[in-house]
Length: 267
Image (cartoon, rainbow, N blue to C red):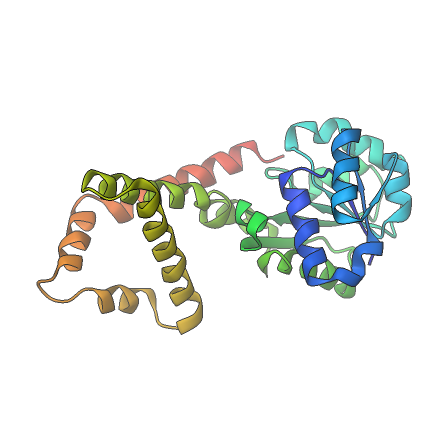
């Protein structure tokens, strides 16, 4: 499948780089267009992909167009693309708050093949988590190739579109919660005499390792937590403070606030 990227910003660029790292022979099948000509040229020179001179050329060259643009310019850009769109091509959107139905409406042509994706920023270091939904027009084989694109920059799961707001709460916004947790650990370690940069390494590596334990051991979360907590020990003392200060409820409240906002702004 030939992928055309409309936009080469942080997320679009990360997906391209990750895909090429996993599939170096596919370089000839990646195309990109960006309104910023200098940025596009620099990215093309860096990656060796073909730079397109217009949206029309991008659509013509591609089997699937990845809409790697900000949600606030969708209404301006997608109708321009629609003028050249044909129903044999897939549209893959990574924009938050833009439903498949809204994309179909902007395209204004029946039978549009649409995939909606919610990636997150760790895709920039090939450790992302992406959720994918598709409409009824896209074939299984086409969808599998899109799925592979996002699995090249981390993990990817297929969900119904009705769960996209939930995905935003559990993974789309979650890096920010995680950074806050790491920052709190670093602040506390620094206050107790540790060098801040060294504390950052300790905290971040521990979060990374803990996540790998969840994904790779198959042990349930409660057991993993209990395995670290010796009766009367230091860890259970810390966990008790977190529990008594509403740690679980605070996370749930933040999660629900993100989901509520997502439902409110989604088109």
